[in-house]
Image 1 (tube, rainbow, N blue to C red):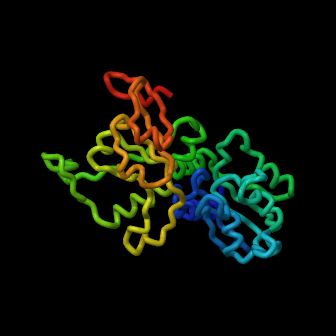
Image 2 (cartoon, rainbow, N blue to C red):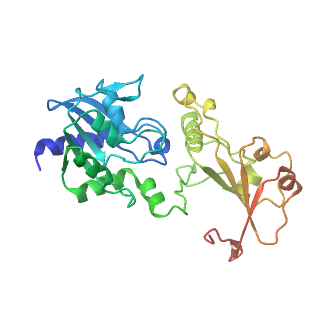
Amino acid sequence: MSDRSQHLLDKAWFEAAKADWLFTAPNPRVGALALSGGHIVGYGHHSFYGGPHAEEAALKDAGAWDEKHDRAVPGIVDAMVVTLEPCSTSGKKRPPCTQALIDAKVSHVLCGASDPDPRHRGIGLRLLEGAGIVVERLDESEAAQRFAEQNQAFLRGLAHPERPWVLLKWASSLDGKLAVDNGNSQWITGPESRAEVHVLRSCSDAVAAGAGTLRSDNPSLDARPEEGPPALRGTPAKRQPRRILIGGGQDVVENARIFASDSPRVWVLPEGVPVSFAVSAQGDAVLRAPTKLSRLDLAWT
């Protein structure tokens, strides 16, 4: 291990940290550096799902990408530093990064972590070596740890695809209160944090709320980043999330705000509890869950 290689890989990890996993999901956060003659000529990270991967972004930053033909330009970049083993799978939104590096005619790749997916682990590195590219590895256990620190949600989804990665959101006063004694609720957050909530919603697959929230707040649970301050107002809604309503489907009324938008709703109710006319009229999905200690048991799946 050389100090220079470690320094470059540290810079690539820093570049990966610029990515926001809410936008890269279901892909991980990855950073890359493009080098020429030992000098960094391009930086790149995977910014959003469907967009350029880190290696492609670094090649573009270095001026080594032909936009018209959507391929790497050879002879500009001779080395690449990347935090994760370059992908080798075709048929995705972007072509394999291994092919981009081969087309760019890089001669050296410094790689951090191996692909954590056992279906692909090692394939990308073998393809690069088969093309005559020197692959350098440092401390693989340290690289795996740093990748895990930056990609907890990604690794959780890979290991347990049947269980979601959950973000718990609430606002409370300094003394831990959510509302005054009579139940009245007032905003105790500012416009920036409320706008951030809508960005989080738009990047999530689903938003869940319980029957108490449904009755007391009459929420719509949709994503409205356009209501935020100027700094966040231009953030596009990645998508409208599904709304998961845990309880409350037996007495919700037709004019409830939850019915104001068309994004899907899923009601989770105990066995045998009838749904209201409003839920039936909308044709919403209803999941039946067992109860445990008089409460819905959400671990039944």
